[in-house]
Image (cartoon, rainbow, N blue to C red; front, side, top):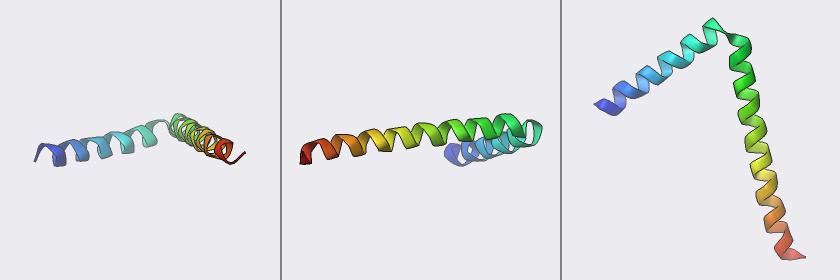
Length: 52
């Protein structure tokens, strides 16, 4: 029950954040995308180093 309430609160906060400041929300998403991209690139380079 607590997980369900927490999930709904998180969703409500995200909607509130996007509605009140869409530019900041877009910046957060772009930062997360960049972080994930760099992480996958690093993992790929690490795996590729074993083949050489």
